Amino acid sequence: MTNKICAGCGQPFEPRPQVPNQAYCPLLACQRARRQRWQRNKMQSDPDYRENQIRSQRAWLDRHPEYWRNYRDSNPEYVERNKSRQRAKQDLRQESDLAKMDVSRFMALRPGLYRIEQILSDDATNGEAWIVEITPVSIGCSCKKDVCKDKT
Ligand SMILES: [Zn+2]
Image 1 (cartoon, helix red, strand yellow):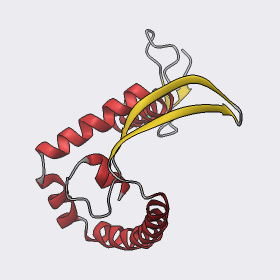
Image 2 (cartoon, helix red, strand yellow):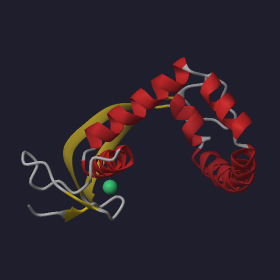
Image 3 (cartoon, protein in one colour):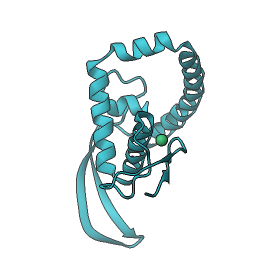
């Protein structure tokens, strides 16, 4: 009988005959670690899976608004850490807002329909064009759409 070393706890264990490549022992904590590692790999290698995970996580948090409140109540140091991280983010954001404002003033970009043409080189186009709608995302936009929340 060959014993293997668990990738989680480092203890020798006997792999199950059905799972010859078993890397983690049957301990609950090690099985959890195995699943987390699998999930991390999957998140990195599979964009669909990642999308799905993020979406279902958001949906879950929407249904459990008390989760973050409880978490913050029992983890005051997390709140502190997050506050200072957000202050740093805020500084960055203000800088990029300034940059955005300058660009939009320069281009006089207004909400509406714009035509975008693909230009292959300076003197030739391939004749393809798309009609797209460009809606500038304004600073402090109150529409509460995710796209605005993420970009402002
Ligand atoms: Zn183990």
